[in-house]
Length: 526
Image 1 (tube, rainbow, N blue to C red):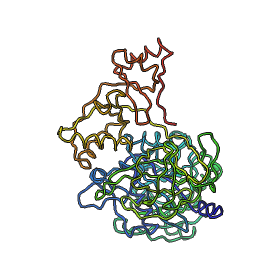
Image 2: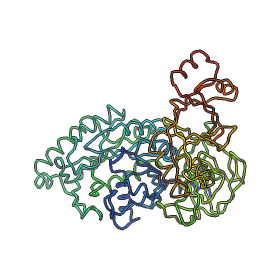
Image 3: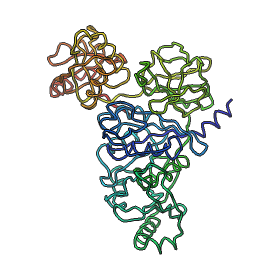
Image 4: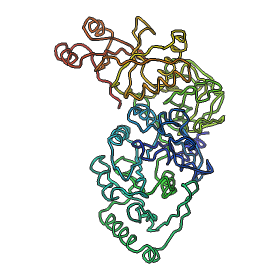
């Protein structure tokens, strides 16, 4: 058993794709599936009527707007490896969901739009990667269109992000006319051929340097000179610094036309790390071959509208998972059966009989499981993994059902979406469900909240802005004093922690200065 776990874990690659909105992340996700043989054709991901939606975008609102709102788990085989791809939201308003997903992966693919370079959201996402010491592979996308010079993009990566770029492949072709790429590790030039709308794998031809110089002319000369410059600078792929989070292998191409997709997918197998022992709450590593353990990083309801179910997504950290085994939740101490364990492919799912470290398992109707919960085989040694920190909310609102006859559905949806982390629902410890406050990182979260309440719970709501400018974590003793102050409201989170909401941030500053004994802690994800 122990050797089987070690062997199977070595075959796993669990990674996420991050990018600024519209950089091509969802398109790249779809093309990975195409090259792995998981789907038979791919198409441009657009929010236009009549276009096929991406496999990873299952929510109506995602398909209509052409953006990823929820993170999705996709599992597929490639080159005798099992790849677990966690697609993430690109919009800043959903950065908390992205953070939760990044807690479950071993590496990241960062997609950059070559016409726009490093954008603010890219910086925010990378800060999360740095906090988790995640190795980053960079893909310069949309090189088939006019954009920034690739050398300028490398400079942005180094100066703005602080990673040393080490190009593995380098583009051949002028702006908007990508011919192929040079693999700097082998000096092989691969020429690409377009397919109709990028629906099929792009034909590739390996061409010798002599022939490339003859057939590509000045485009080859320019690319070869730039590749030589990179070599002279020592910008070569270095596994040790990559795994340490100091450098990033860079790949060039276009997800839309499938140029460079195979090189990037191969790099995930060849460069990205396999699962390693996860640190528990005491910073002690949980050996891979220890009894089965996992942690819940995402909860999602109503992916299957026919059954109105609830799935807890758990990353396996150690041991072999067998469907039907009894696991315990460390937070509650309660056991639960895993009869309805599934592997997930977008909104589709298939019953899974076994899983190993690195795999993501969907536990269907595992009621009572919350985001951040540690799970372990109740016949083995117990473990507790660190909780997943929450982001500090930046916008606040109140909500009420448009139809008071839908109050029951409203309360049910409120609780479910709070457990999923769609928004944070803050409740008065004394009043319960009465007059809750919604807290979010961005306004778009409220739009998703309202849409899902209407279409999944049949409870249309009205959302009103709430006059709060700041939030702090507090304790019971401090809360008693804070309740007496004007413009302060004390509420509780799903995890039971008390928070203080302030209508005026300057009043908060005065309290912090004049009454330092009160507990007022910032909410920091890290």
